[in-house]
Image (cartoon, chains in turn blue, cyan):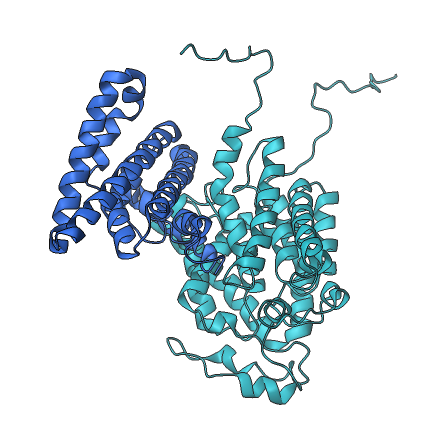
Amino acid sequence: MQPDSLSFIFLNAFLINNFVLSMFLGLCPFLGVSGKISTAWNMGLAVIFVMFVSSTCAYGINALLVRFNLEFLRLICYIAVIASAVQLVEMAIKKISPALFRTLGIFLPLITTNCAILGLALFQTFRDYSFVQCLAFSAGAGGGFTLALLLMAGLREKLDLADVPDVSMGAALSLMLAGLLSLAFMGFAGLGG
Amino acid sequence: MLEHNPHIRLRTSPHIRVPQSVDTIMRHVVYALLPVCAFAIWQFGLSAIALLVVCVAVCMATEQVCCKLAGRPSTLSDWSVVITGILLALCLPPGFPLWMAAVASIFAVAVGKSFFGGLGYNVMNPALVGRAFAQAAFTVPITTWTPSMVAGRFSSFIPTTLTPPFLKPEPIADWAAQLSDGFTGATPLALMKFQGIQTDAMELFIGTTAGSYGETSALLILLCGLYLVVRRMMSWQIPVSMLGTAFLTSWAFYLLDSTAYPTPWFTLVSGGLMLGAVFMATDMVASPVTPLGIWIYGAFMGFVTVIIRLFGGLPEGVMYAILLGNAISPLISRVTQPRIFGEAKPKPAAS
């Protein structure tokens, strides 16, 4: 596959360089909201949505900043613009579709300034993706995040009733599961290359 | 005087009692693995014996220590940890340094199993967790291969086996080259992937090729698996669906381009696919529990194996395919949950 083809960009962000399991970005929502499959799914949808918003915004701002030779302001602009754009969209959703807001609503503020979201914006800038490539990249990254979250939630639900020794209760268990999942994802290294 | 002696004994059900418990099943899995071990020893000699002994002993010791630390009764007697040790040893390459094998064994049992509460709660196959850890930590030794059937294999070790702890093993290419002419230090899968040379499928089936200790003879592994299936101690669905899917997927690619992709028979008998499908994917704890779920689980692993082999960076993908299968199995169980008998179909939610 061509390294800049849309399918490769998607696959790369989805499996090979999964944001959570091989680049270790966005670990706080990954550990925090992976207790139940249903919440994990909603969180995943929210992340996909925010990734699209952030990718679109970042593409626009970058064009503007490059135009005025203000690249050094990139980081702070990204944070401010992405966070406020998500807040605006959240308000709009609350007004237009309360049902959707109840599903996604509580998760949106949690992830607006998350490192996975900012990472996505920075990666796409450094790799000089075109707008369509950016969309493919954010779809892959969001999908990969959801996949990791669902796998983790499945395992954690399975272990809910396990007779876990005292040392490995709680956070230790989650971190170790994340590590094992990450080991398993190493198998995708070099896929399609 | 006739004594009252009834000829009919009255008993309540169940009338047929099979004393099948966890340790019986596990013991029979160990029996089924013994021929594979014997073949490995015959092929690779002293080094195979040493590695098997070290892996099993370290696994058992780790289990004992972990039980003690957790303040629980020892679980050594359920035989499951012996299986972990044997499987780990069988999927390591010949001449793998013993100290590294010991580290992998400790990781496999302590992190892969005891950490989650012991047998019954391990989310992934412990032996494969150990193998994946070794693959990540010791990349060079675990991809160094030596020829099988070396002449002096019962009198001397493969040189790298006895590497002192915490040292890197010496390069072994010269030693291997002088023993067997034209040996390039590659397994049939690596030859196929990087040089496009396809080994004869029949040779692979019988098992006289290079490869990990226990993965070489597909025939022997199948026979041992058959024993377990006949004794009803292993589900036959998982290996059948995994091998079947791997065969079909690779057949599809072979039909697309028969020069670039290997024949389906080669896929089936090469590498660790047979060992993985028969003895590792069938791990009772880490596979789904629903009847439809285990078919999907097997098919998923077969498919991922072929995809990683054909398009991935590594020549072999069985280990990762099984780990991913283990990871996804709770989701599969959940999606394929059968309807409770008598339960009404869920109505579509009012929107």
